[in-house]
Length: 78
Image (cartoon, rainbow, N blue to C red):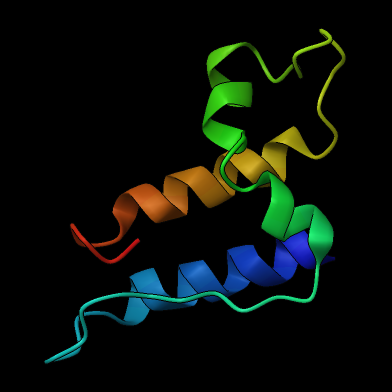
C-alpha cells in the first residue's frame, strides 16, 4: 500500500500541474520500504528488476510506474 499511495500522489501531481511558483514535489512517508529504496529503483530497473544478490524485486510494476511518474514531472521538481 505504501507504494500505491506514493504512486497515486505522483500521478495526481502530474495530472494537475503546473502551478505558478511551485518548484518541487516532496513526498512524505512513514514507510521505511519506500524511503530506503526509492533511490535503488532506477538501478533495479536497469538490471532487470533484480537486487545486487540477483533476487527478484517485489512490486516491480509499482516501482516502474513510480519511476515513470517521476519522469513526467517538470525538470527540477523531483
